[in-house]
Length: 458
Image 1: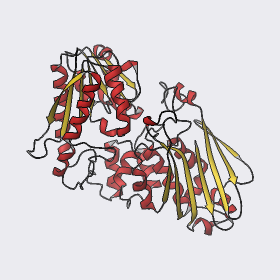
Image 2 (image 1 turned 135 degrees about the horizontal axis):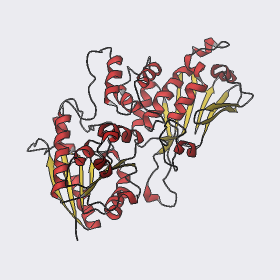
Image 3 (image 1 turned 90 degrees about the horizontal axis):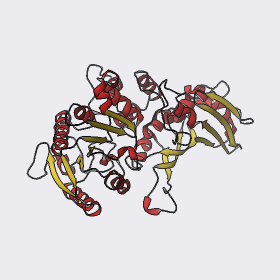
């Protein structure tokens, strides 16, 4: 995991004074999760570069020696040692804490002066690359994005979600460090520790002077706090100096969200029961809202659920009160971390699979892999998929033309696009599909949610 900071101008060796790290010798720091190293690959009068390199042991993470007393936060095979993530934010605070405060005993005038800086974040997990300019450019940065194919031998697999991001701007070093501390976890959302109220204080501290005025303040706050609505509301209320009001939600426009979400979940449960399924898997379960409803149904003898995000599974466990469930329900339920785009035998053997408001969070280039995982390998008798109907968005006050309902959506399809996609699946994988509508119906735009109920052809 590597971050470099370059200073160009005159007497750029003074970067060492600003960072409080001597350019003439490498330095090592012990962190809870590994080692951090600071060194200077380039030192001259005109250009000096400092590097922060983290060495993280993925085995230690998986064994649970970091952040958890009941097993690790990550699988044994994980990308954490290489991807710029919350580990880097923690290291910035630990290693460059004095620099982040804006203090420099020897060069205070320089610390107070905007200078030409260039930060390169190596291997940032940015699945939604379109958000990079929207997040960084309002802060005055010019950005350059280096992308990579998933595999040179298989171009059809598309581009990797990992990028090298270069930020160039004229600003104080402490401002750059605060921006990096907050915004790196905005793109890589797998924080290595539990999100609680203390994160609000960190966000407000590091976001002081810029976050409140940022046009994507709510998006940044939501992603930084892992979409924990109670924490987001508290943070936004303090940012807007309005502690008496809850901040508006972002997951669905206006107050229609709870009603629509409940209607949608009930419709999915009804389809599961109507299919005659005895076992069901909730793919991309999020906080477990659908899983909780399925668990109540006596018709179902086995309910499994998974999500790619560890923190989402932790919230699902809290909502489901797993530790307090009756033994019968505990035996009925299975929760695990998994991906929608990689084959996993734990997803196979179920009568029914539900994918509710999930596909729009995937890059469209990943849908081919997703359909293979679901329809070819898992191959359940019944599949239920829901996704927003883009045509209905005109009914949401305040939404701009071609805007998406949620900042994390990669796309939203109209009815014709959804129909074309589900029909192509049927042609490729021997299923038939019934397309249904969920929510208030408009003669011109249809309903807010569209649902495909697939049945395997025997």
